[in-house]
Amino acid sequence: AQSVTQLDSQVPVFEEAPVELRCNYSSSVSVYLFWYVQYPNQGLQLLLKYLSGSTLVKGINGFEAEFNKSQTSFHLRKPSVHISDTAEYFCAVSESWGYNKLIFGAGTRLAVHP
Amino acid sequence: GAVVSQHPSRVICKSGTSVKIECRSLDFQATTMFWYRQFPKQSLMLMATSNEGSKATYEQGVEKDKFLINHASLTLSTLTVTSAHPEDSSFYICSARDETGYAEAFFGQGTRLTVV
Figure 1 (cartoon, helix red, strand yellow):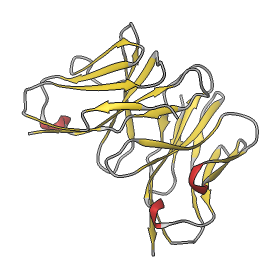
Figure 2: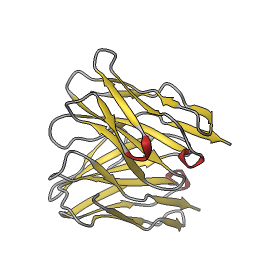
Figure 3: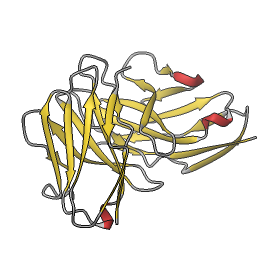
Figure 4: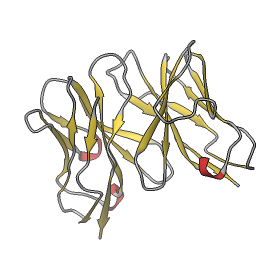
């Protein structure tokens, strides 16, 4: 079974500052990793995903994440945030075979202040 | 990207009635869809995996007679909350994976259910 730990429930940051949202996972098998963003009362939008290959993954809206197998981490970063980045961010994992269910972390609330 | 449409986006019902939520994959086929429940300021909890043409697989602790799932076609899965009670009030989200793509899961807009 897989599990995901998002170490920070809330991350406040000023506009144009860099940000890192942390995610660690646990699994006994090979996995796919994802970051999703959720705006209030909406579904989830995929920011980026790691399936295989290069460990640095670039996504939409200037976000990127790095897969670190030895540390079982998949931290999300953005060099300069905007007010519009204020949202809930979820890290998720699934087994890397078939079309398996996603297991989500608890979420991190990113609050960007002017 | 692919689109998953969920309907209704918001519903209010009386205690004891049943509510049906639809989840459609608009431009791709999905033999597997997933239903999640999300409480305020919490993460998504997987309720069940919906399989086209067969019975859904429910997660531990989820009442299958309470949350009826039907996946009658490759583009439609429905979740019916039967005999709803106020504690069933929640945000329900469906997702489907595009099996011709790269394992990405697409999510519906969610349904806010309020039972009064």
